Image 1 (tube, rainbow, N blue to C red):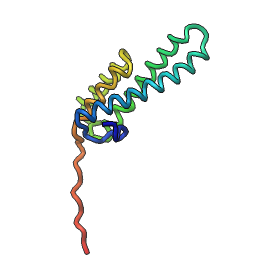
Image 2: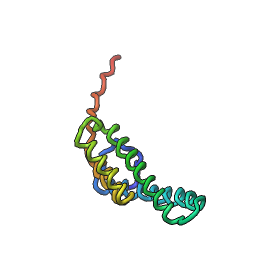
Image 3: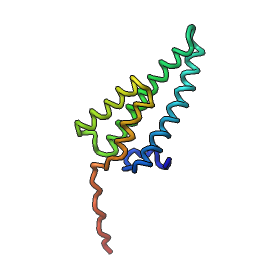
Image 4: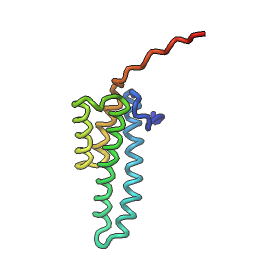
Length: 125
């Protein structure tokens, strides 16, 4: 379920997509907590609100990077509908953090790659 969560070119089953979602959500929560905490204690005023702001920025950047790595590795980067889907994931992460933003990359991970596998070249002896 959690194997190969950083292999963005794979076509995943529904169970593997859940593992992809949960694994990346855990990474986002952990990194958002650490960076938000560090930023919050260095700022004057409300550390909680500063931490939330940092968490949203991290989620937007993380979802954008994952989405576009996936599009590139699956050969979907030139398809308009997939670019719009990736941008919708980024918009969802701006409004709902990683919880909503990672839904689109998880769904995209279940789609087959558009890069055709080249046939194996014959071995000449």
